[in-house]
Length: 297
Image (tube, rainbow, N blue to C red; front, side, top):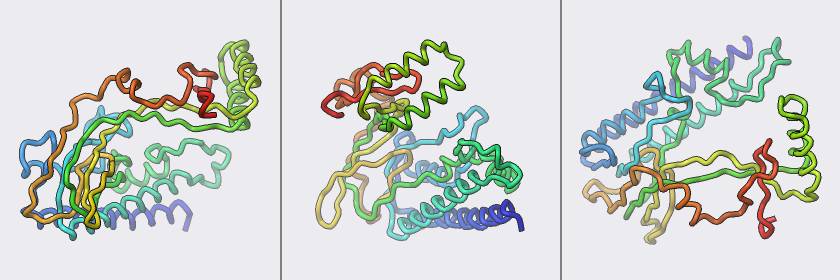
C-alpha cells in the first residue's frame, strides 16, 4: 500500500467520525428544544436554532464568489444542557483530528517529487488533500469553516458584551533570519539594486535584535463574558465567530448583552487607545520590519 493510499484511508475514517459527531450534536440540539437561542442577526429563537444547525453542518464554500478562507460568522448565545456541551466537545475534538490529518496530507511529498517541495502550508491548497476531498464528495471543502472550534463553557454566563477587536500580529526576528531574507530578496527580487543595498546598510547599522515583522491588521468579533465559575463571578474573553454555548438550565432567561456594532471603530480612534510599542514608519520596507521603541528593546 502506498503512503498516499494510507493517508487517504486515514482521512476517510476521520471524516466518517467527523460527520457522525456533527449529526449527533444536531440531534442533541433538538433535545434541548426548551432552551432559548439568540443570534444577533436572526429575528427569533426558532430561526436562530435552525441557523445554528446550519453553521454546525456547513463545511463548504456556499457561494462561488466567497473568498478563500472566509467563513460564515454569526455572534450569539446558545445556552444548553450538559449533554449538548459534551457533544460539542466531541465535535471540537473531531475537528482538530481532521485538521491535523489534512495538514499531514498537505505536507506529504511523493517520492518522485521530492525536489519540488513547496513552502506553502495552506491545507486548502494541498494537492493531495484537495484531490482526496474532491473524490470523497467535498470539492468546495472550507477547512477554516469546517475545523474551527466552537466556544463551549461548562458554566453559566451572566452577561455578554460583543465588540470588534483589531489585532496586528508582530513577530520578533533574529539577525540571522533577517539576513537570510534580505539575501533572498537580493537574489530574486526585481527591485533596483540601490534600494536593496540601502536595506543592507540600514540593517548593518543595527547592532541588536530590535526589529519585528508586522502582519496586516485583522479584525475579529469577540465577546467579554461575565461567568459564574465555582461560585465566583469572573470575566473572560472569547472569539464570537459563532454563538457561545454555555451550560445552564432551560428555565433561565438569556443574560443581559451588549450588541455587536454594525461596523468596527475607525482605525484612528483605536490607535489612540492602543499601547504603541513600535515606531510609526517601517525600518526595512522590503521585509515590513519595524523597530521597537527604545523602552521595549
